[in-house]
Length: 272
View 1 (tube, rainbow, N blue to C red):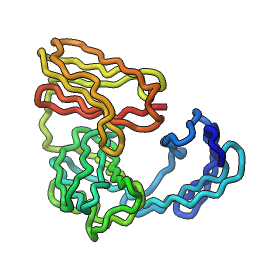
View 2: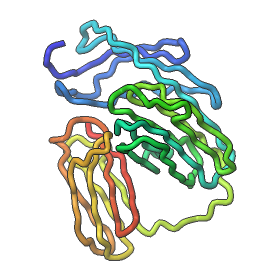
View 3: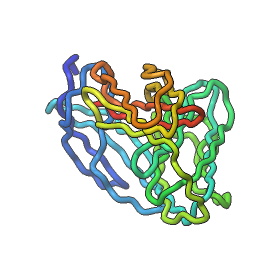
């Protein structure tokens, strides 16, 4: 293809061997830029593996034959809440990182990349019912070399996910939490929100602070690299807004890491 922007794509996606084709033309993708494109929603059965492949068949209405991108999806049903444990065994190349998303799409937990090999363990407690999404990424595109590289355990140590690291750039798992029990309510002292999101010119990070607080806000790309420090100062009690320009950012997904005194919040931001 020439060095022209991409204005439309035709993609064929297959779910367990059933193929569908759709046309995407939501925005212009500059040459050499990266972007995230979503297929139409489809249903899968909990507790079963589902093979999904995606192929680009046309770019700007010209025929194109891309290699198929294969992923295995599995939706796991969790019947009660409490602390859950996520274990990720990584190699020594510093290419692997992950993000766990709440049902509303905000980031609940994220980590990596790490410079040394070993098993990284994180615990978290879901605070609402719904479908949580776990994504594990490898920036080189060759996954990780571990027999049980990705593990997720329920509060009673029931194994929800236990799989190796055989994937490309990304693998995704869906965890359906349909019952929360024995979870104490926790008052949110401070709140963080982002709007508009997705954004194409500017976006606002809104902070509601219960007291004057030291606040650091930094923007990261999906590889965990810091792009920009948006603020590092003491902000007053009440409503505060941090407005920043996104026109110089390549389209794609970014993360805003907000540190309010000793509390850490993470917000996913999509730039169009």
